Image (cartoon, rainbow, N blue to C red):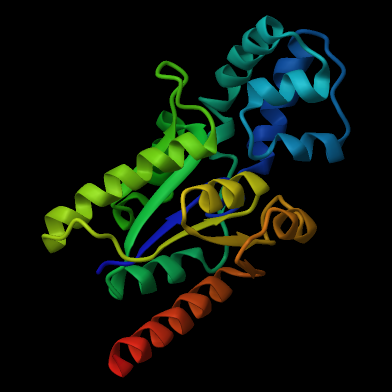
Length: 235
C-alpha cells in the first residue's frame, strides 16, 4: 500500500503573508474601507477571503465579492510572488519523494494561483496531485477540496499499484480548517505551528500530531513507517 502525504500551501509550504496583506490593503484602500489591525488580518490567512471580508470587515456578500476582485488584481500579478518557501520544506519533499510517498497539495487558494506559485518556486515536480479552490464550480472550502484530492489520489494508487485500497493518508496544515477537514475524511491530521495558526487552535481542532518544524513532519513519518513495518513483521 502507498502512503500519501497532503500539504496545505499558505502557512505550510510557503510564507505568503506579505503578498496577501499588501493585496488586502490595496483593495480596501481602493474602496475606502477601514483596514483591520494585524491580528485581524492574520485571520484572513487560511479561509476563503470573500467570507473573511464579510466576517471581519462587515461587508455584504456582494461588497465582499467586488472587493475580492480588486484584491485579485494585485495578488494575481504581484502579491502571489511576495512569498517564500519555508526553510526545511525542500529537504522534506526531497526525502519523501525519494522514499516513495505519494504527495499532494490541498489548498483553499484558487488553483490557478497555487499552480503558479508552485511553478515559481520549482515545487510542482514533487507533487502527484494539486487541487485548489475554484469558485466557478463551487469548490471553495477545505473539506470539499480535500475530498477531490483524495479521489485523485485513489485513482493514482489504483494505476500505480493495481490496488483500490489506499494506504495511510496524512494531511499537513497550519490552520484548524486543515485539521478539521483531515479528521472529517479519515486522514491523519498533522498541524504545524510555524505557519499562521496557533498551537491552541490546532489542539482545539483535535490534530493527531503537532509539529514545530518541517523536520518534525519527517520524523513523525519515519516513526510511523517503522511502527508499521514492525506490525507487518509481527503478523
